[in-house]
Image 1: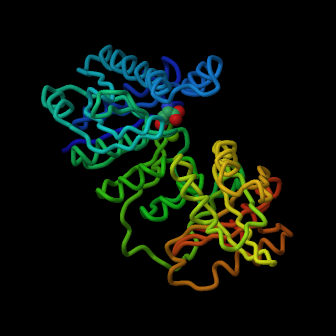
Image 2 (image 1 turned 180 degrees about the vertical axis):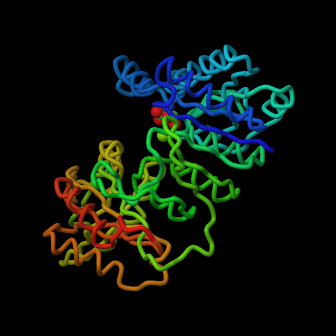
Length: 405
Ligand code: ASP
Ligand code: MG
């Protein structure tokens, strides 16, 4: 049997009992004959607490120093887990991102993994150790510590699995798998036994919050199968892999939502100004992601541009826009009371009328739709935040997602 990578999230290692439980699970996989690499997150809400500590000192902490601070959370987890495994009589060694060869670019707080130099990990495995790697962190070519963005431990795990050509990357979390909708909103949501990479990428990017989207991207590129499951139960979970012959009878697989968005609208831009290029180039330079975009003619030879960003990027985005050439002539407004509801399904490609059915059900519910975007396998609508639950529930029932295939 080959190498498996197991990733345990923050809730799974929150406290000594849970760490011991993880240690037992890891050792069980060793008993089954696997070589095991474990990637862990910081315990519980440690990362949030560290961020608060920084905020108490400075409203704009230098990003390099923020990374130095945030990386300590995962370092606690790896050391404690190695100790817990040691008490069970198994050999284990903890490695920071840098020691584990997680090489990143220099974008502090949002770094991307460029390469995993897996020599050290491989050597430790060969020595018979369980190797525990700190998630969420890496190191630049200049030897500075970086972090990979919130939820980044998933990406660490997948990147390590790809570098080691692991059989599977198991993602242990506090939910039992990927559901057709968030079960907290839609109690009758169904556990999906398997999901394709494309669908998972859409679901993850749309706020399913189970996997970091970047992790799914890396898994798809390297063909690493993912197994999303609970660290607290034996529930079978969800397998994420390439599903070519997937039955396309079902046009929609799941409903996702994102209530961490904000809408910016710019009105009265004189026509000769290329507002798209101007705004989005400026935002891109600051690393701000833009999502839904609509540009319309506002009449009187002016243009209106409306788009969404993550709520946490709103203030920074507004500041950038207000400083653009000519901005003093525009009317710039922001709306934080919006949320995005999306339907996702690879079967959409072959079944027409899916978007129409979504608009239909939202209209029946009296939910106004502000912006729409689509891809081959998803339709997203921006709706008022206080109507989000109704919108998700209505879509879930319209596409009969609680029925088994
Ligand atoms: N500890 C980091 C976070 O809270 C990374 C992770 O959990 O994946 O975002
Ligand atoms: Mg996570």
